[in-house]
Length: 476
Ligand SMILES: Nc1ncnc2c1ncn2[C@@H]1O[C@H](COP(=O)(O)OP(=O)(O)OP(=O)(O)O)[C@@H](O)[C@H]1O
Ligand SMILES: [Mg+2]
Image (cartoon, rainbow, N blue to C red; front, side, top):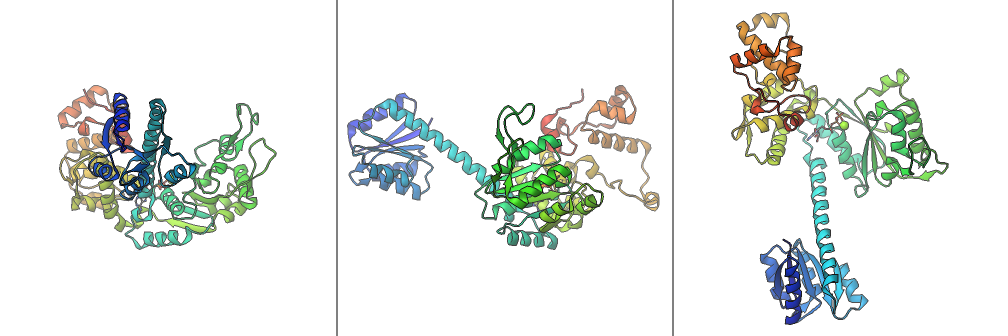
């Protein structure tokens, strides 16, 4: 129920307005002057103030200013019997949501109140999203313990304010999109849109109309004229993600955009001026793509004005402890779990691994461990099976294998079954197919070895979190 504070020195107005609003299911507070009004604002989380302009100890605008100065999250509607345009304009300029002139009818007032309350909700939502975005992509929240990453961040801060094109390279999951976002946030374009297009995700014909837009009738199915993503990012930043996957014709068209600063919608004759900063990202070696004839050299030079390379995680192991703690904090907060620490044995394990999926893989792993943890500390047993084992079966030489502890066959079978189950997100049918055994046999082994899915849920896969949310493969 929204809380409304009605401030008016006239007792009858206070009472009639309050009574009709109460009937409309708002919770009403009343005050006769600025001082009493502010006192209520101090003690209650008021959603909306409905204040008279002229009050015995000041004006509605004084109250509005005080409320803004104290950052109270309330909207203010000013009521005035002397509706000069000046006072109305002043009230709005000082941040009032609206104003009404006396005498007003309650119907009109209710409409304005509802509109102001909706505005408040929208404002709150925008603020939350902005905060989240800022928190996630601000360079202060990009973990960089390694000299390597610190150099990248330094570079980001230096080049962000320029308008030069940047080519961000690095393996999958190394943080290319994160860096692109940070460049945008630190640039003078940050108030304008940041749009990322994944060039690898769409077939050529669709990508073209997504990027450039089209006019009605340009092709079958083009029933409406539509602006493309390049136009939508006008004034802001456009990230062409997976640029190595864009076809030669699309590269040619993009090159023209960069050289002329204009675009043409598919099927249109008109050229439109646009102003974008271009960022591109890829995990491909573009020089090799050029040699193979899949990438235009002139386009490459045009996008590769400033190159930023993100090293794979295995080459900056010193970032792992910080990253792990950072992700622990993020995911524990997200599911409201009180987990503060990571066992040093866990960190040691993480440092030994090669991280083919880089930081994304590390984040997914921590998210999984947070979901599994049953104390204030992440321990080895909370990690997926492949990690929680004594000796990960990785790149072992024959000499290593001969040195290895000899395990009973049953133990090897148990570990193998667990490994396979994890690989297939605990999907019994797939596990049976891979192991080439029947469901009955699998069931018998699971019972024998005391294996059950962690938490009754299905972990595993590239995005363990999705598996955790999406499936619930319990063994019966
Ligand atoms: N240095 C870092 N500090 C904090 N979080 C990071 C860092 N680097 C990457 N991340 C996080 O890791 C995840 C993967 O990063 P991102 O999506 O930017 O990678 P990418 O290189 O674009 O991967 P892909 O090539 O697969 O698209 C994101 O959730 C991102 O926020
Ligand atoms: Mg990416």
